[in-house]
Length: 366
Image (cartoon, rainbow, N blue to C red; front, side, top):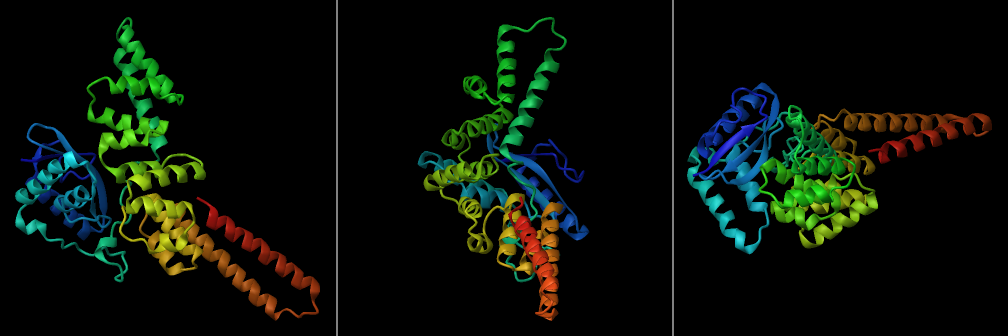
């Protein structure tokens, strides 16, 4: 039998930290998703899937309402678990999870009938409604790593504040956290590798591995190439270095997400624009919008920009449209200006060049 615990759900119609059976969680997510859709709102919350022994089987984020992809938890877990590539020896566990969710989910909740997103174009297929989802895997990995380390260190300091002195072991841990905050992760990795870790420490260790460039170790800890690839794409690295790491990872663990992120870095705008079936994180939506702008498909760019809460994305489209309109207006003015009026024509042409430079700045801005 499977169990679910939700955390960070802002809507009180689902109780955080309550141990629910999988069937109860399916019904709860279905009801809240429908309610939020009818209200025209959305929210997200994390969840963890356990077995009877409280062994963690899967973790993720579920989005309720207008921004959601799945009608209930059954569809999300089934979709994501099926897509996880596992070692042969772990495939039996994967199949067991799929069998369990199939047997424990009430039949009525297995139908993929989702109310259409009111801000989606009717030309899109339902499988493309993965827009404006909260970034499942968090912000850029370096940002996550710093925040996690800072929080962990502060917790450790607070915990020891009432003690007269720290033991040698405690000092070792605190020193390791402080070194990691300064970009030296090896000591903390070594300490974490030697202990029985909590779920949060597993997450931290994954980010530490990625910060050190140990992508394969990070994958071995999660068995989820989509998660690792998405974290890789979020690293604060130079484009060349990031591209090389993504290409290396894609060569051994190919995913649609990897192909998309590589195409975005290589500025393969046609591939980015036509790609459909990936996990739509905020950076990927932004890349999609930029690709459509390069292809001068303003309608599609506007449509995709409307799916994200990132105001910078919509501002980019608006600024692009304003610059294009200004260039068109100046071009018309140039046509109507007499060829004999050399001074006036030169001023207009110089303004057009300046606007075209602005346009390129907009396109290449993050």
